[in-house]
Amino acid sequence: MTNRPLVAGNWKMNGTSASAAELEAMGTGYDSALADNVELLICPPALLIAQLGSQDKIAIGAQNCHAKESGAHTGDISAEMIRDAGGKYVIVGHSERREDHGETDADVCEKAEAAYRAGLIAIVCVGEVESERRAGTTLEVVTKQVSASVPAGATAENTVIAYEPVWAIGTGLTPTPADVAEVHASIRATLIKRFGGDVGSKMRILYGGSVKPANAKELLAVKNVNGALVGGASLKAADFLGIAEAYRG
Ligand code: 13P
Image (cartoon, rainbow, N blue to C red; front, side, top):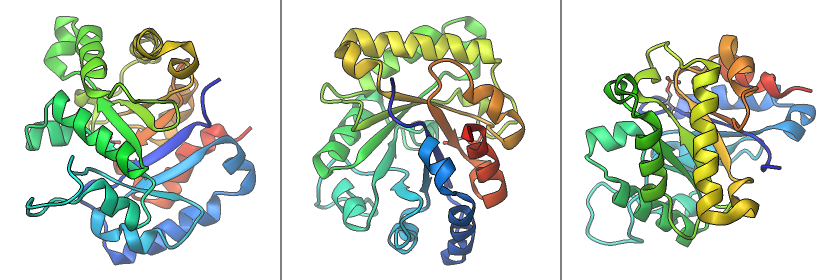
């Protein structure tokens, strides 16, 4: 048995203080029956973490952190600062950070360790680009990323894996449920081999990439899919809740 499924919203570089109204609407639709079955998380721009964390229905997290606790790193924020602002989770190694900021698996691994140090849960992102999917190297690429990006100290409590095929992000394209099942089974096997059955079978593995209310039920029903990491469709309460509704009993 894995932990309670997680539907996480990554707002990326979207949202202002006025977004509190959208979060409030999400909280209103997230009733106790739904909360029994699924945990909800929003990762807004860092400037909004403290403000949005003032409610307690929906967990708040960050989209990135620096590996160090403090120091001369202009413009960066540490995992400890996220925790201090009320954050519970931090996304590390999103493909947009790997691409825009040249983050390597080793960098991602250090950031996940920083999350543990600060008492945050790390959401470690992996996923192949389109050329790798076409070349048939998806499983190889993802296995290597999981092995090198997830720290040795990972547990089912402090770590969540997010499989996001890069070509499916923001494109409206998604892999077939069979393709998702294949990659998630491979990630599960990698985790069990490395961390043992107790930890490896319980660690949550999210799917991300063009998840919306219309396809959520099908994608979230796939074996070894323990939730979703949602971009565009997490900005509006109706869409985000529409995805979470896939878990209503
Ligand atoms: P979209 O849901 O907009 O495709 O983005 C997915 C994503 O990158 C979430 O981290």
